[in-house]
Amino acid sequence: MTASGAPVRVRIAPSPTGDPHVGTAYIALMNLVFARQRQGRFVLRIEDTDRSRFVAASEQMIFDALHWLGLDWDEGPDVGGPYGPYRQSERTELYRRKVEELLAAGRAYRCFCTPERLEEMRRAQMAAKLPPRYDRHCRGLSGEEARARVAAGTPFVVRLAVPESGATTFRDELRGDITFDHHQVDDQVLMKSDGYPTYHLANVVDDHEMRITDVIRAEEWISSTPKHVLLYQAFGWELPRFWHMPLLRNQDRSKISKRKNPVSLVYYRQAGFLPEAMVNYLGLLGGGMPAPSAEAKDAERFAFAEMVEKFQFERISLGGPVFDLEKLRWLNGVYLRRLTPEEFFAAVRGGPLADDYLRAICPLAQERIETLGQFFDLTDFFFRDEVLPPAETWVPKKRDAAAARKMVAQLAERLEAGDWTLEALDAALRALAAETDWSAKEVFMLLRAVATGKTASPPLLESLVVMGRARSLARLRGFLAAAK
Ligand code: GLU
Image (cartoon, rainbow, N blue to C red; front, top):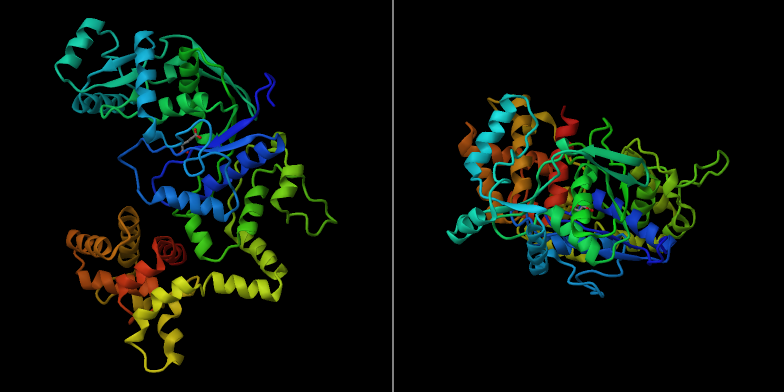
């Protein structure tokens, strides 16, 4: 219960823009522990209003990854609940109504500035070393003028009218009061010209409508929070409590990123991490669990139930926990060793040697071997964690290692951005070759070496499709990290 007697309700609000992220699992775990400690409800809401970044398969991947980890929600798009729909694209009518309310109250205004004007403004601000910010050009338009432009069919966005002076202060439960001077806060777009809300508007409206009492999210949203607070005030709504969790970091303390760590949960599943070990590891980050005493050998190993019992949000340290893949591997090894032989056998058969995976690989091998004994000689790379090819196999003749590495980095970027189908991979490879002085053949050979560790393999692109996006890209990134 909260102080006002309302039952605790928390949520995660991932956007389906690609592979499910390890940070999403971390925040989901924090929310779930918080809810279970307080007999609260845990909601999953899909924030899919950014149509330019929408990836159709992503929502299901988020569901699958979180279920795999056992981070199950009480309400959500797939299980329903009293405050649905839980997918923002199905709530656009509500946001439109709310925007009208803000416009009528003078807390928001229509902006007709063209993308060209905004671009020019941004360029001038950058040249003058000013922070990029909307110059409020349209804020002074009369209601009449705005209506006339709407009637004439001029495209517009709706912006938040941030007070011109003063400041907004809110309480962060982990940090205390945080104040943002209004000069620092942009007149945020609330509704885009396509009629879809931005994150800020939809997030606030939904947190209110879904009776969220505690917003537990990553620290990167702190700078958005003053905008949210202004929105709550404009609507006259009670604020939730805000808990901004420290960001997971790479070893060099930068924000966790795919260049330095695998971040896709799909990768961790495919690479054979056990869900219990993942949850345990994520629970160690941030320091919410009691420090292990010197004599308690096994104290870093705990299950979700123990977290619910012992985790304290007040204990969280704000330094930003380093996501340490080596430690996660070590912990996973601890979990593997604790399996019974039968469980271990089942884990191998359900993981690296799962029927579905083998079934997809078999057709690639059938035409190319003479005895079944050669099966793994040909296909070993499908089952390995890492294949690091000797330099003579990946540096093409007439090129040097630096140029080849650069090409692998470009390949990783390109392939990451597109679909994971034969056609898309083929097109991406050929496009990259055409843009550089590399031949398509050279690019294929380099990719083959890096992805399979071999100079000859079953058809390369078919193999990549079977290995999957997460595993294939992890291999490219792993190569780049090792080939420094
Ligand atoms: N849609 C945001 C995200 O992708 C949600 C942030 C929040 O929790 O407010 O993380």
